[in-house]
Every structure is written in C-alpha cells, then in structure tokens.
Image (cartoon, rainbow, N blue to C red):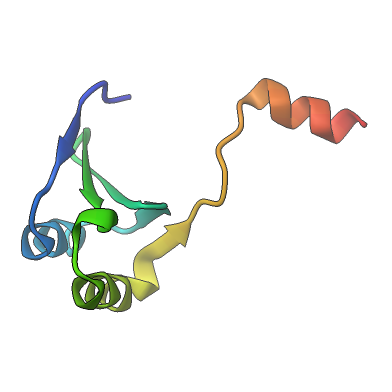
Length: 81
C-alpha cells in the first residue's frame, strides 16, 4: 500500500488521471484514485461549486462513495453482536 498521497490541484489534471482508472473513491471532501501503486487525491472543498458538480457528474459511473472507514476489528465486533 502506498504511504504517500499526491494532492492534485486542478480538476482537469485529476479528470485526466481518473480516465485511466477503473474506480474513484469519494471520501468527503476528497476524490481518491489509485494508479500504478500511487494514490492521488483531489480536495473538493478547494474547488468552486461549479467544478465540484462537474467532477461528480464526469465521474458518476466510476465513483464509489465511502461513508465511513472502520478497522477490521471494529467490523468483526459489530458482526458478532
């Protein structure tokens, strides 16, 4: 797993990258793409509303929305109850 995260500043650059991957994770306020062992992210909170809508619309078919992140231990504890 990658230890570094490359922050992409422009929507256009992230969309070029996202075109090459099968899926993009949305963990608000970030869009995250994993490409050739590297993790790239775009901070949606830094973009104007118009660009956020464009990003989400452009990536609609390959975006997976992650509501929360849990450890395996937390998940197993919840399943055993």
